[in-house]
Amino acid sequence: WTHLPRLLLMPLAAAAAVSGTPTSPSGRPKVILLDVMDTLVVDPFFRGMHETVFGCETLEDLFAQKDNSAFVDFELGRVSEAECFARYFTDRRAVDVARVRAHLRDSYAWVDGMETLCAQLCEAGVLLALCSNYPAPWADLVEETVGLTRFAPWTYVSGREGHRKPSPEAYRIALSRLTGDRRSGHQWDLDAHDVIFVDDSQTNCEAARAMGMDAIRFESADALRTALRDRGIKLPDADT
Image (cartoon, rainbow, N blue to C red; front, side, top):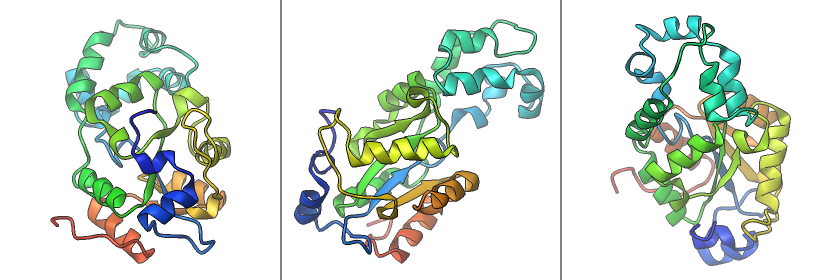
């Protein structure tokens, strides 16, 4: 947390005064709560991992052979990485965990256009935070590879909190992290109506709306830029 952008470590009102942060109808600054996988960072699982790592011809073949509860438990922090892959397939065949991690490390990359958009949002004074369904060790691997905390803190990771979006408890915890996280030392005066939630899952967006947040389903950086402009956030063009 010590290397977070300066504005993220300031009280929300002070950050707004310094930066000219866009405000919500309440007069408080807007915060964008961002999903990570396939919103900010390409998810390697859906990019050939079934073949290169697991030896399955198609993704459908992989799903037919895997124990679907294993990764869910890993993503909820109930089991370790080693325990997850010990039971990853229903026939309990061995999985080379080192090969899995190497593939992930080699494959993590920014979704096209999102690094530029995050940089422009920070420059515009918009406060960003991350909310991810992902195993804690892999969130650390994403950070080592991509460096998302240049722009936003990892406010919520399912593998650390024990709940996954679209569970209401996941959103409650994320909001509580935004309004006061002792680890970062900030105390942001906001509520759900001050938050714009962005996720590539429509189900997760609908759940965020049910909690009182605005929500944008992520389709592309350009579409997100347009949706944020429509909400009053002033942003330059992507190639500026």
